[in-house]
Image (cartoon, rainbow, N blue to C red):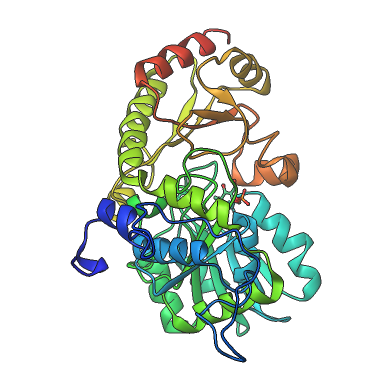
Length: 385
Ligand SMILES: Cc1ncc(COP(=O)(O)O)c(C=O)c1O
């Protein structure tokens, strides 16, 4: 076989780290539900000593995800939040982190209510303009942390421009790539140092397990994160690693359908008379449509739209039948949610107003059902308004 880098994305997702089992020829990676490994003598082993440190199913998943993001290594964790926690645990008290002001709500919750007590300093800024990032850097800034597109406002950050600043100032750039998946966006190729995913979403793709990953461009980061896996122990179980290995095999195929249907649903909503506004980078009136075309190879499945009020949003959400009302995203099924009372309730009314999240906003993660069924369902639900 050609080397990983020369193989296409879909081929890598199916074969990288997923080679047939050398012992039996099994075409799927075996699940190794073992806590420990027999050693041949003192200091003599087959590379595995204790499963908090290393597990063969996990090794295979980490190889696979590193190949998909183009990193030197990947480290998987028990959830997306555990992965983000590991990223900021690489820093020490007094270090400063510049963050986007429109991150997934759980991330500022971790930063402000846990990590700040350990002496980390955070600034939240509008990273849609790279100049703001440059201005926010301090002497003690060690990391810039962004999500693009953001959740739920679908704002983009210019990764090439931000990474040029970070490189010049010797600051690490970490990017949460959950919304796009490596299929549509490759932050490491644009100069980022670390890529984070909640594998719970598109990488797993079937809404049947939580998980997180950090993919590294640098060996020193990969080593530190492996140390944190062993030291802190928030690792992904062999069974859940296997679920992601299985899910990721269809990532390319799923993302194509997510993207195709995402564009159709966004167009439909943009023309619907009950919808006030649609936020989707694929729409030509999105303020950063040109950047989206340049930085991403698809627009994806995530759409936010405004129904005008909390009352309207509630009426509509009660009526959906094919779409399921629930938190999360990236599964084969269409999930629809209400950011103000769900993912972003922790920000408070003032915090939401400050960044532009309204009570009428609804977020949809377009699944891979027949798109006509989705349009019909949305139409009948919107007719309740
Ligand atoms: C963009 C993003 N990052 C991180 C997370 C956290 O991931 P997890 O729920 O797997 O801990 C989420 C969860 O919704 C998310 O949407």
